[in-house]
Image 1 (cartoon, rainbow, N blue to C red):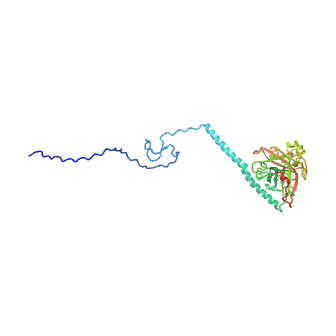
Image 2 (tube, helix red, strand yellow):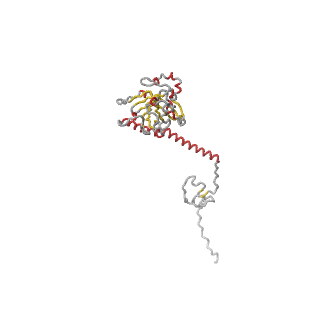
Image 3 (cartoon, rainbow, N blue to C red):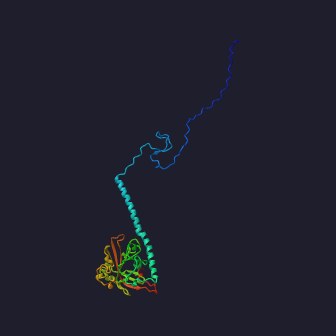
Length: 348
């Protein structure tokens, strides 16, 4: 009657089948978000600095660039000798460039500038010759041209049929930049005495660049408003020693109104076709070349032409001198202005 009052336990519910165990991935903290991407400014912009490095114990994590805590590499100092060599080399290169530019200017640029000036003075001279009201300086005892004014034209057929320059009055540097210049104290073209003309050999038009190519008896022709004057180069020193063999050259023999060419003697013995002198030897442009003290009366002087230029090329150390003698004059014919001296064709 008082038996075990406990109720039997209720029946248990069956457990469900267990799922197979899978690999559980380790839990990692999320990556920190990108806060700032610095602008790249080149390798040298932050030389000696590092950007933020979360694995660097020296970093302050301020988002900027931090000075490198490491010692920068030591730079090798140049020795005094190397510095001197480098400096001298730079100076030499600079000097070479300056010299090169100077040569370009002197040889080419000045030629262009002088050609323009030569064209202007030639035009002015031709316009004056065409003006019937212009005075004729050849009718007066002395030339009365203004400094730098064109006075005549120079032709050297042996240097080419296109060789022609207007001669200006005066031999200043400004005059010679225009063209050949007439020594003011020398004779007029075709007059007794020495008609002397100077010209550059390199740069500034270089009208006398090839005078060393002329030979004995080559024609040198001067044109004025009223006349053509035909000069011929006097015998060179070498030719004069054996002039008998050269005298038969038609250019030297004269005839048909021309005076023959032969070596000078007496007071004119120093007047030779071509020779070299120092810049101080001004006697070469004297009325009697090389003999300023000559006593020959003015009206009995030989009619000569003298061309002077620098020697050698690119140097002002010496002067090359050429002397010529007048062999004939040809008056211009107003009725036939195209009549030219036949000597102009000797270049053909």
